[in-house]
Image (cartoon, rainbow, N blue to C red):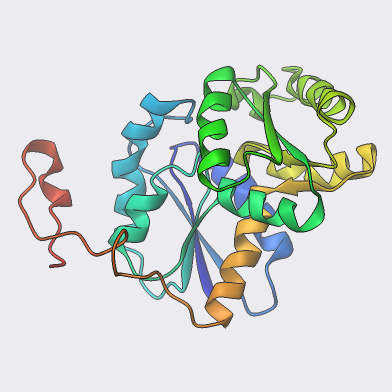
Length: 243
């Protein structure tokens, strides 16, 4: 099967990091195809960045051919509902996939993300996905692009929040709340002795399961194909033609 891994920000190194994590867990016969948004923000930190990342994300998904499923490589689940409306094959987000995976492993768990503005956004997702009674969200005060800098001190900040989550939240597992943390999961799991879930890996394995079951996105109701209509100005290229 072929899984498209789409980075909705424009930083290629983050795409490469996520792709490495995806390929490390992909089953034999699964090919990971990558795409990086060609327009939009360099990183996604909060609602404004997320809104302006959608055109670049949807552009990459719209032109995908021969794909069985897609994973949006941003823990904010940027554009997830729009992408599911646009196409029929399964589309998975990192946050939803990570929460479901952690739910199989522990009763209580904590998401450790980057900045406070992202913490608030992710708390809303945690409640939307039905995990509000089981999960907390912590911010480590790390700008996303600092995860690319080995001398930024980002790893130390992340470790401190994990320590606090285990001591103060009663967390039995940790979720890494940013695609840029994908390469840290295994080492942190060994260090802290609890399951550490990376959303990229979780989404890839769930995508494989959906494809194996020949399941596709429902086009009845919420994710129905958009009605054909005209979009104006710079959005003209995104005018839906499906119905």
